Amino acid sequence: MKILTNLPIILGVTIGTASAAVVVPAGITAFHQGDSLDGNGSVLKAVDGSGMAKGDADDPSTWTVNSTAWADDWQGFSSDNSGNNTWAVVNLGSATAGLDKMYLWNVQETNALDRGASAFDIYYSSSPNLAAPATSGTVTSYDFGSGGWTQLSAGNNLAQGTQVGDTGESFDISGASGAQYIGLHLTANHGGTRTGLGEIAITTIPEPSSLGLLLLGGILGLRRRR
Image 1: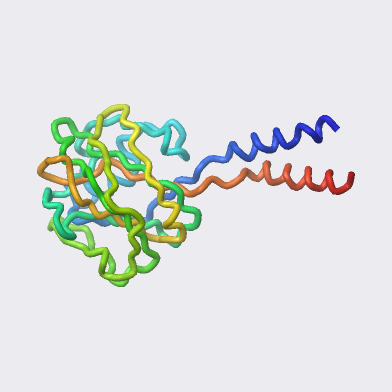
Image 2 (image 1 turned 45 degrees about the vertical axis):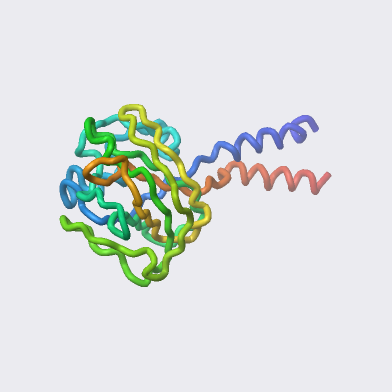
């Protein structure tokens, strides 16, 4: 009887140990490539984990910045945040259920912290009417009002980077569950000559561990037999 009584406690602990799943993006496009198309300082650096110390690889809330090198940042070549000029689109690869949070870290390069984005709107889509243009060395605008996009939130703020040890900020994207694309309309920076980000990480809602589900089935079975 005592074991049966204690099982719910054990079960709760077991299920609670499941961690969030980090979504590995299939790609990212943006208004400008940054310092290169696919190398150091490119927009690809914003989703590859470079420059980050990962306490738990599956939990971005434990990640901190460990590099202030320009090569690990993405800084698009425009400070004109008017209209549809500055943006980024993360491709999750497929429709993704259970979206939970988006973690953002800002530009961390010494003497360039003001190039980080300071305000942005979040959009999501499963099938945009107009695909985002390919990233290049030319600043190219993109309108999230072109069809197929839904605005999730507006007027979000991101603090200037604090360099090594920066824990970033998280934003709720649970309302975008089922989307394949997450769009960021970067509406302001911190006053610098470019606009960019340091890192983006997206997670899905943690699922109960398989052991926890097995124990749940067992305890329900025992109670039915009593």
